[in-house]
Image (cartoon, helix red, strand yellow):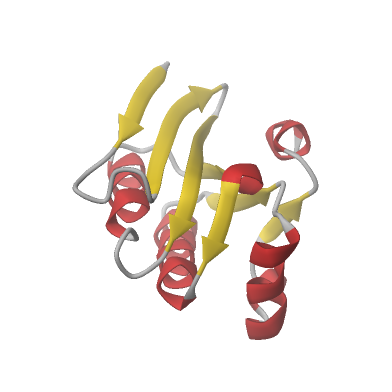
Length: 122
């Protein structure tokens, strides 16, 4: 089921595509995930968990930038999802985004996949 695209006044900087693929809720942030755009990803992820969709896959292949606020959105989603029996899987990270995870050590607390297909098949 395609849930469409989330957007706000920050349109153009980030939009988030949300869809259901099998047992996973897939989020594809496109653009820059930072202090100004973080709620565009946080809100649909929180809603998914509240509605019982707790296996969250974030397709990072179109994410151009992620700062500490964006990282905190993903960490918060991980905690909520795991508390409900699920988890957050990250897929297809570009090197600039992967570097943020490496520097902070966050790559050790997420399940990271090379591609969306790998994440959905896991």
